[in-house]
Amino acid sequence: IICINMIHISPWEATIGLMKTAGRYLKQDGLLYCFGPYKENGTIVQSNLGLGPTEYFNSNIDISLKSRDPSWGVRNLEDVVKLAEESGLHLVERIEMPANNLSVIYQKKK
Image (cartoon, rainbow, N blue to C red; front, side, top):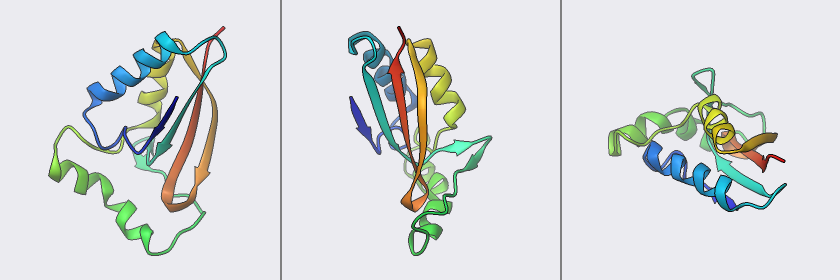
């Protein structure tokens, strides 16, 4: 399953649905790939890859999203990982990407 730029631009309930659905329908060892901005320990992840014109945008993305819809926002990766674990998935890789995004890969537990 591939999920790109959804977790931060949707209510938390959408992420709950994503994880529950992935946990239910992925076969053993199946993967869920998520891409987008995250916070770690309450701070937006700032990668060293591809910084430039997008740096200002990404540093203010959480404020911008919440001004459009209070249920949106950059999520704490720790909260998303916990939710994934509760749905039978475990974190297998976290990869820094350009423009302060992460690729986060989960696998259905055996």
